[in-house]
Image (tube, rainbow, N blue to C red; front, side):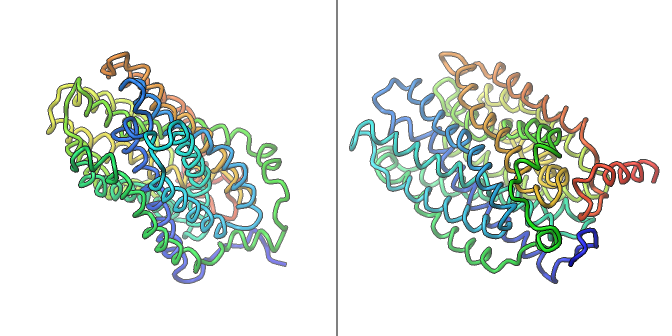
Length: 450
C-alpha cells in the first residue's frame, strides 16, 4: 500500500503539460464566456430583446449574463463530487466539450424576430450549460496543476489557469473587434454569430492536449492508499467549513472582472459617454495583454513571500483603482481610460487573480480539493455574475451614476480582504500535508521565524 504522506513527484514533463492543458482549456472556457459578455453588452439587447425599450433590453440582456453564474453552484456540486471520485482529468475533458458545444449552439440560435419569445428562452438554456461547464473547469484545472507542480512553485504553475482565462478574454476581444466594426445590418444578422462558431477550433486543440494528460500523483496516491471519498461534500463540510466560507468570500473579487468587462463596456459605449465600441474593446484587449505578463510574476512572488500579502495587494488595490477607471470613462478621455484600464485590470487586479488558484487550492486536502474549490468559488462567482445586473440598476435610469457603481464594486472587495486576513499561510506547506491544520500552522510558524 502506498504511503499518502510520502513526498509526491510528478512524472517528468507532466507539470508543464498540466499547466499547458490548464491554460488552453481555460482560454477556451473564458473565450466562450467573454464573447457572451461582449455580445450581452453590445448586441443581444437588439437581437433577443428588441421589443423592449433600450434600457430594459440592456438590463434583461445583462441578466442573462448572470444566469450562468446562478447555474455554477449547481454545476460545482455535481462536478466537484465526481472530480474527487473519478479524478481531475475526466472532469477537465467533460467541461471542455460541454462549453464548446453550448457556445457553438448560441451562434446557431434564432432571433426574437424569427421565433418570438422562444429565442431568449433558448439563449438562457445555452447560458446555463455554459455556467455548468465553467463551474468545474477552473477547479479541476487548478487541482491538476497544483498536484503536479513542484511544492516550491505551486503558485507559478497554478497561475496558468488564470493566465489562460485572460488569454481567452484577449482572444475574445480580438475576434470581436472586426465583428463590432461591421455595419449594423450585417452585425445584427450574421456577424455576431461568427465568434461563437469559432470556439469549435479551440475546443479541438484543448481536447487533444487534455486527453493525453496523466492523473495527478496526489490523487492516485490517495485513491490507492485510502480509497476515494464516497461523499466528498460531507467530508468537506465536516472538516473544511471555515475554508469553504473563506473561498466563497474570496471569490467576490471576481466582481471586479465582470464590472470591468461588461458593465463598464456598456457604460462607455452608451449615449451618455459615447466612446466607440472598437476603442473600448481595445482597452480590454491591452489590459489583458498586461495581465498575461503580470499574473505569472505575481504568482512567482507569492511562491517567495506567501499568498496572503500578494492577494491583499490585489483586493485592496482593485477597490481603489476601479474608482479611477470608471471616473476616467466618465471624462470621455480615451488615453486616460486606456492607461487606467491597464493599471486597474491588467496589473493590480492580477495580483489577486493570479494567486487565488494556489491560495484556495492549498486550503484543502487532496480528497476534497476539487469540491472545495469548485463549490466555494462558484457560490462567490454567482454574486460576481449578478454584480453586473445590480450595477445596471445602481447606475440609475440614465445608466451614468458611475460613482455608485464604483462604491458598490469596492464594497464587494471587502469580503476577499477579510478572507485573506483570516486565512492560514500555506505556501511552504508540503503538498501531501495541505489541508491539515497542524501542518499548515507549523509551516506558518517556520515562515515567521525564518
